[in-house]
Each structure stands twice: as C-alpha cells, then as structure tokens.
Length: 294
Image (cartoon, rainbow, N blue to C red; front, side, top):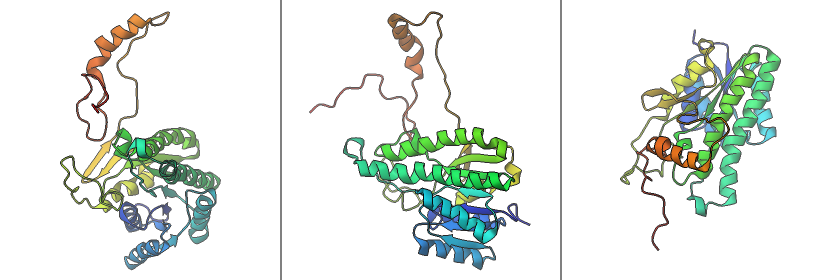
C-alpha cells in the first residue's frame, strides 16, 4: 500500500509543470487525485497519465481564484471520491514588469491568482475537513522570489503573503487536525522560460516533477508533526526555511533618542544589514543609495 492509500488530494494548476509532477507522485503513492487547471484539456491529459499507471483521478476546470470556483473544486472532490484530505495550492501566473512600469492589471492579476486563490482554496478545503472531522493537509506554494526579485513586485508580494498566511493558518487550524505547510519549488516551466542567469545565459533545465516527493510526504499521516513550515524543494534539494524573526537590536527603558538611534544604526546594524534578493549577494549599498546620473 502507498503512503497515501485511501486519501483524496486536489492539486490546483495541475495540468502542467510542477503541478503535473505533484499529481503523478500523489497518485503513485496511492492518493486519488483531482487535477485542477483552467486548461481542462491539459488537466485531462494528466488524468490520463495517472489512470494509465493504474491510479484514480479526475479533471477539474474551476477557477480557484474565485469563491465559486474554490467551492466547486472541493465539492467535486467530495462528489467523486467522498472526501477531501489534502489540497495542494499550486496554480499561478506571472506578469513580470519593473516596478515603475507595472500596471494595476498586472499587479492585481498575480495577487488574485496566487494569494487570493490560495486563501480561497485553503478556506473551502479546511471548512470541509473540519466537517469531516479527520483533519487533513494543506500544502501552499511560495517562492524564493519573496526574498526579493527584480521585476516581480507583484509575484514576490504574493509569495511572501502566502508564506505569512501559511504560518497563521497553521496556528488556527491545528485544533482541527489540519496541517498547513508550504514549498518553495524549483523546476523548468512556462513561468521560468524567459528567466536568465546573471550572465544572461538561459537557466539550466530542472525537472519540475522533482518537487513531488516532498508534497506526498507533507500530505501523509507520517508528517502529522509538521505544520507552519516552508521548505525549499526540487533540484535535488530539501531545505527548511527560517521564519522571519528579530535579530540585532537594543532596548532602553524610557525610549530611544535620535542620538541613540543614530548610534545603534552605526555601531550595531551597519555590519549586519541583510542581503536583498534571490542571489543573496553581500549587502551592496554601504556607500549609499543615490539616483543614477542622467
């Protein structure tokens, strides 16, 4: 028997790339899979792959960035398989543009699909899991872009929001036996095809299905002690990400004067300022941030 035998898991954005890999691995571990994708034809192709390997799956074309779509996806799981035990929120889009050129529509579209879609899917799935009384697993998808990435103010904000939401949902849903974690996956997909290495060369190919085994584990009962965590996955790696936390600092009874603040910045903070962005270079702004010469 597989580690997920008897469980039903829905995967949003499951028709291609990373989501397709999740679905194949989940089915291989014994789960019955609902493959959700706005491109229903692609979702049906993944369902056909799963069935060809002896698994059980159905396709779903609901738009999980809407309340109606998220609710219908969960209802579809229950109608087909009698229950929902896991939801992998993977659906996403990119609308990359430098900040000063980004439009309202480009910002709103990415926030709607990633952040709102994750919120709605998690809420509808958790409501059903609470009603079922057996607990469950929610696996969200964040990204290293939430460290900061040029041209992705919308995407990085959405992914940072998903990480923070994961921590909060884990706290709130634990009493119902519902675990909430997130992965920061890697893989070559349509969303990465225009990205380049720092030297301008194409990114090397990374099999997007490599993220699947971690998702399988997080959806399983073996992971009943894991919640509120974010993991870097794919590319042959598995990393636990640190939670945001306060580091260097000082507390003075009665408050801080301006001179105190200036001294703390110079003596304590200056040599500990955090690197910015995915590339994690040493902090580059010690000589000051000034407008470029015109």
